[in-house]
Image (cartoon, rainbow, N blue to C red; front, side, top):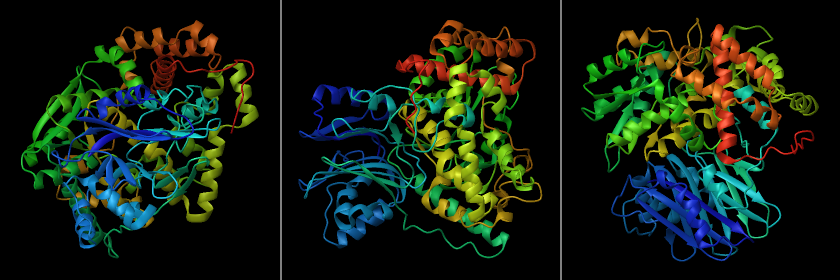
Length: 605
């Protein structure tokens, strides 16, 4: 049951017309059915994308007149939970996965989430005593949920997407000023923050409870699901891991609509496709590449996996000449800037999957964070005591020196007075390193903060823009639990990353994939952003000197200097920096973001 959800609780009264506007802005994520239940001080609603139990699944799910629930996501163990609840005397009208939730909540209260195996964002209205709204997110943060607490009228608003949240009318579209430095330091604003001032994202494994007249309270929860024992040596552990992944993929294949896979040609998605094809012969797999001859093209590897396992393979070709048209669409659907150039390609890929008739696809996202797959992990592990700064620098769009050069005089002074996000991340990593060691400190940071914000929200928003549900086996609770228990040398060592996952894939994938050098699944903007090519011309038009001067965040002279450098001496870092500035500017334009007085920045920490 993939959906979009929304609602509020508090002293505000949101009329039906405005609730309809909030819902309509999420219609692409749930075109099959719209519903809303509203009373004087609260409302919950959803847009449904029917995946499981197509003839049922009417939301909100109810237990009597006292418990009402809306779900965005999938509950993969709903059959098991249904059987246990039926043994306790509960009855159900249909077989939709979300139908079990009111009974589960009635039985276990807010601990109901601890029993769930899946990806989800859930809203519960409990009318039994005092009216209470509870919001919950899954352990990895796969499904997005945003909220805003209006102190003035003591009202909490929530929604699956930022444009929808803004449509409540009481949610301001003002820039959170520290977020500009945050964005260029890490390519996205992560954790609970967003670039909209006062608007927050509910973190993974979180419960937010709100009662009428009370400020909302946030707490974390822990799943009861445990991974299988791995054993004490790598060969047995790799077989156990492969078995666990196989069971996860099998669970994710269950749907009442056709399921496909994404195969970029790398290890993670290729292994998912291999496991899925063994369960479902001829499964459709999708790969994306670009019209023309560009670096980082992986389609030959995806073809090899397809030939080996007999998938029905689709090669989606994106024409770089269409990028200027796609850019504002991507900026709109993301809701806030994400500097990963793959956003453009992802948008086109999910559109192609939808046009091919698929509502569900399985991806390899999250494997690098679970099993230590990035080169920056390896580099940090072999560096000396001064490993933190190079690691933090590797996360960003531009070096600290370039960021200072890019900022306007006023914004540079603001950061000087209030501190940079890079320093805050460094302090956090330093403290975690003392508690648990270097690699675990890094992986905890990546899984808790960067993975949900940089990867999973991007996938969630861009897929649902085309009514496509993306399932992510590497981010399932048992895999997350398993990954947290691995010894360091099963993750990285001897100059290699993701060691246990590579071992688990032996015999499952062609040697060409197992032995190839890892490369990012991304858009080759360095090659594409050249003078005379469409992408460069689009960037030049968006980064208008007068607009930059008026906003007073970036120096027009510094931006023009970067444009000249890219025109004469193309460089990957410069191209990424310009790309990031364009995405930020398109977001400002799209949402008419209020920046505030240019000379007197107000910082509310």
